[in-house]
Length: 104
Image 1 (cartoon, rainbow, N blue to C red):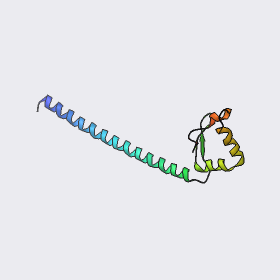
Image 2 (cartoon, helix red, strand yellow):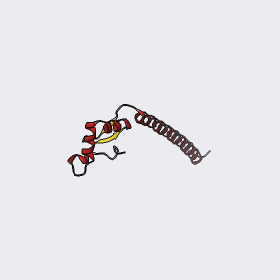
Image 3 (tube, helix red, strand yellow):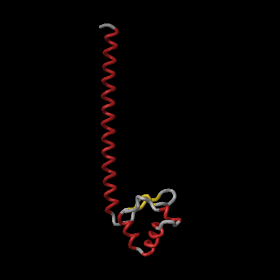
Image 4 (cartoon, rainbow, N blue to C red):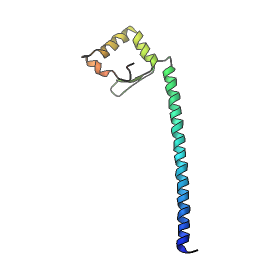
């Protein structure tokens, strides 16, 4: 076997190993992404079905998320109703604090 043939054989073997390594990595990444998506879906179902009030605000205190129980609690309480009215009234200083994610 000549030196160039031996070198070519080594290069082909190295390329095959790299390909197998890349395929294994891609498979692992695909599995991790699928598990993350499944976990996020379970969490979303849990939060959406919860009877407890769950909400998230941004750094400025604006609502970025409110689950159905939170929205219902805000709709049914007298103080919350006036608060919601203030939030949704055009021209009030607090109307800009209403998050589109909060709107039904």
